[in-house]
Image (cartoon, rainbow, N blue to C red; front, side, top):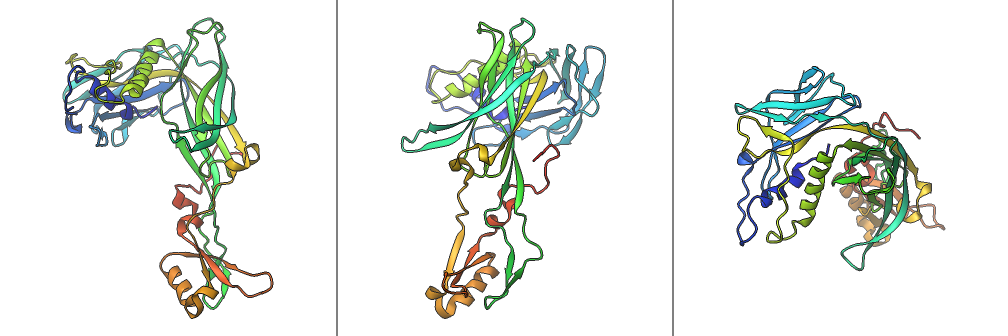
Length: 395
């Protein structure tokens, strides 16, 4: 489920009026609105519900901890109490969503009882294909273009009902440290193979941001073809070795589609505080002891389909797969440093730099200098990488 909080702040603006100039007083987090963010699907859990309070523009949203009696109940009588597994995050254990069954979230907070509407899991149609094409796009700077991959998705609906979808995706890629370390330097041009080299192969995982919706409501055929997923730029190490994208297709009802659509449009239209204010976007959770209280966010019940694709570096252009070499490289030349070469090299290593390799001239077997790099160039974990290969990964 997306982190709704980054979209919610614009809703607060929408509640403050629009005809007169004003200095908006956004409630601080301790007095903010409750924000509910969670989904149950027809795929195996656990399912997580996040509860926070909306915050002002310059603050992080505040997780709400210690929620009492939080549970998901099903129309067929099954229910499960959720456990707080992280601050403000409440998770199921054994509950399994079923297509056609309705589900409702309820909890107690500050002696008030909150409850969502009943939400029924709709079947999500088969994903026919996830594919991509390489594109170059302009930016707000007319002198700068970006190259990347535009992803698309196709599906087909076997029944005649119009469908509504929300899409997310997860990116995973394998990458290498640009300057893997093989040797330790011991002075006087003496080196040996390093016994404990830093990690040079890693994986990185990122979830999509933004709201991505689709519907067949106004299409002549009940088929979704060429729907735009994300545009992924190649200005980093994403496509240097092997890349994977997992597309997630949530089948939602019209009511939830309208919620996300309004939230998306409100986020786009905010612009200036004194522009036309966005419509009030309400979710499906209510304080049943005080129905006048505004509760933001949404508890969703959705059918879920997933499709994963892999892209090897040979499938993209040289410009995408050739990440720029680490910029934190320093060249030390004996001809420039003279007697101070050795002291300078050892001093930089003692200060945290790492010996990478010697420099040679073709006519001389002796090194004419050395290359040193900063740790981030040699250790991929310092670039947010993980060394453990993901369970799903295939070569």
